[in-house]
Image 1 (cartoon, rainbow, N blue to C red):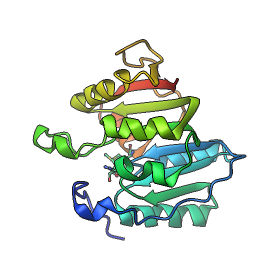
Image 2 (tube, rainbow, N blue to C red; image 1 turned 120 degrees about the horizontal axis):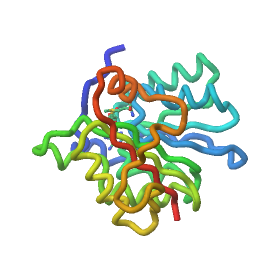
Image 3 (cartoon, rainbow, N blue to C red; image 1 turned 90 degrees about the vertical axis):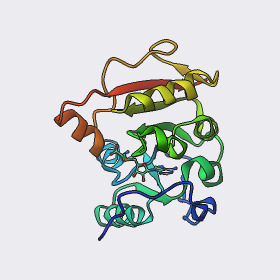
Image 4 (cartoon, rainbow, N blue to C red; image 1 turned 30 degrees about the vertical axis):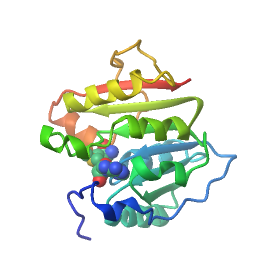
Length: 202
Ligand SMILES: C[S@@+](CC[C@H](N)C(=O)[O-])C[C@H]1O[C@@H](n2cnc3c(N)ncnc32)[C@H](O)[C@@H]1O
């Protein structure tokens, strides 16, 4: 299948929710990755803890189909949903549905002139504050310094998120989940710096 490299999230086409809501079982803990791409991270989480449910939000529709096809073939508790995360998260989930939210290497839009297309901002923080249950975890990681600063600005500036390492401080103990996203694996293998931040939902 041919996968598009990027789409422009500012395109009006993405304003309408065209995806399918996943069927959620309130008895199972839910983990959500925002901008999941191939969902390598979620498939590895599902392999290590299959009792939970894993949902990836993704704006590239062809990747969503690819992930759902793979999940069906493996019988894995992973679902991808085609959506614009900043606009549609509250329409997809009930309030407080997730016990973890991952934002792994969120953007291809690291150039300053593309700043307006970036995913991590106060609008996304609002959606994540709605999605995460009280005491739930938000984990953000990126290899782009400007995006790490966007994340600190968006979440440390919001009293609903408590930075586990201390205010405006990066998480120094590596990825605590024992699985890696595709981009994370790539960044580690090529020796790029990675900035990580771990929050608890107040
Ligand atoms: C750089 S990739 C990282 C993918 C994966 N998380 C990883 O670490 O390997 C960022 C992903 O976020 C998706 N994305 C960007 N903006 C989005 C938005 N507003 N809503 C949903 N997905 C988005 C992109 O299509 C892309 O697949």
